[in-house]
Image (tube, rainbow, N blue to C red; front, side, top):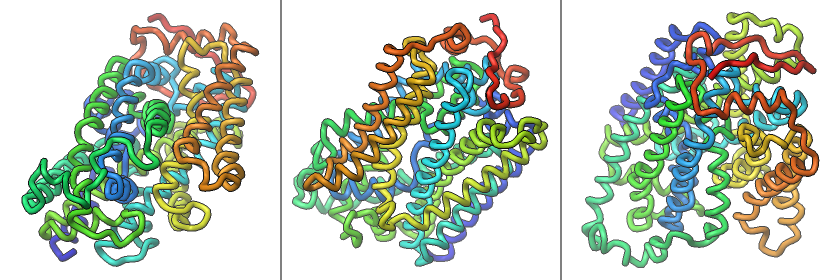
Length: 526
């Protein structure tokens, strides 16, 4: 990097902070901070949903997969995400929006205390927060790894720089700042991605051109859609996982659906995000597929290949723009995660821990939300320093094994609890599903993995916990049905096609329920 690249990077950081300061004027309540008051346009929600779904891990961990295996990086990652979101646009997006507009909640998990009970809500809230700390820690480590390649600064220094800048704008401006910065980041990513694509295509004339290049020995097997550990079972498992994860199971995407005015607009938002996931990653991945022809990765997993290729192919200025693109991915996801976890802590956890939290005014609730955001970012940055340690191993292991494997037990009760078909499944089914899903993750990834020669294949490590949770949720609900008129009423409110309440007054957030309370929202006419 030279002074021009640094100027682009510093200018980007300045714009992000300025957006946070501008967004601060739009945040007057907890609802504004966490769900944009239900006033976000569907197209902005869709772009934000898309941008908050992936980070610099794409340019490190998934770049390594593309460098080693080729097009399977798209077939087994972004394609299942696109398909999962498309399905969720009908199944989940409108219902999650109605959690805000009809049940008047500010956290995606807040409705669980009435849909199931308080212990279920707390189990999912605590486990979800802990998982997100690990997940975001891997994202900080990914961007710091890239920054170290370009600048030579240490991993911990890179984590500190990106974490502090992200903390400033998302703490000040809430979800509005997240969405608006993600819009700017999308434009930057568009320019940077096209620049890299053009630079790589220009080099392919030496290797037979755009189509003939696939015959090169260095790309042998790269055109196969399913290869290595990423086979059919992995693809099907990942599709099922992403159906839940990217439609709200990881919480930050659920907020994008909640931020739109109506369920119909939430569905449009999801369809836009699905289309972007289907098309745009092809542009981003193509240079990674070609990377074995152009660079020799220094790391065994190939995770530094994209950064090395960028340094080699792009002139200064454009190099800075691509580096900004790396940052935009990570900062988009981490800021949205921070906002989601702050919502869970402020609305779901703190009122159970403290009687004072149950009496928070809008002002004190906003202060608590901002403090929770800062604490979450600090904890995730601390975890980031431990990535590549014996506990967490490499970045892609954290993202695929830990996050994909543990997401299912948390997401199954939350997501399926919205659907009328699963109304018989109550707190016993939810807690059993959650508990045994976590146990299955531990057994498959550790005791069983250690005792099997060569270890348990990756596709089973990530799919078995979700399968266990799903089966138990359905079976226990059938054996021990716990549907009640109050629970049925909650499902009915989010299940109907009409859009009762909208933004404004309907988005107001009442005080959280006290421990042990069963608060049933008043009936609204559709």
